[in-house]
Image (tube, rainbow, N blue to C red; front, side, top):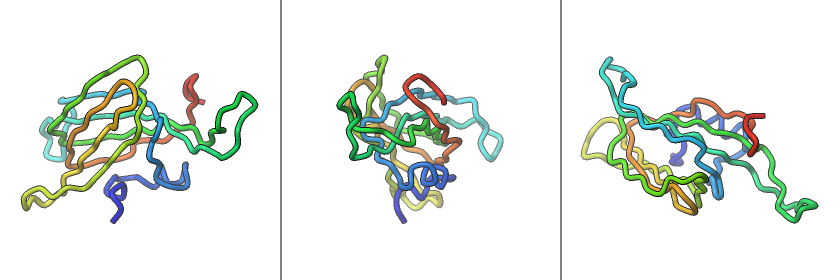
Length: 147
């Protein structure tokens, strides 16, 4: 299994981009830490919502001298039963060199543990672990906002 396949609704991302993106040079638009969401058992669980700006980069150069982007989108992730949160460097712009999602073993527990790393380029960096992950939405987006 590829690591992104553990993320529920990953097909929304695959349908939009035609592949699972690395989110290289992508931007963290929003990060929400929440301890009030209810889990399957009705008890509060810690969650992280992550909204990332991503795209496909084409080989074509625009008139302004930059690579042409296609399928610019905001990808909304939800991570549940979050632990081991370490974040640093929140800024007015939070550019990633990549987003890593890996499946980890967790000492015999039934549900796998998902390790998420926000690889630093500029601004926010860090990571956390979660029991579940899902894609809530993928919508067209440009630097000016939702299209």
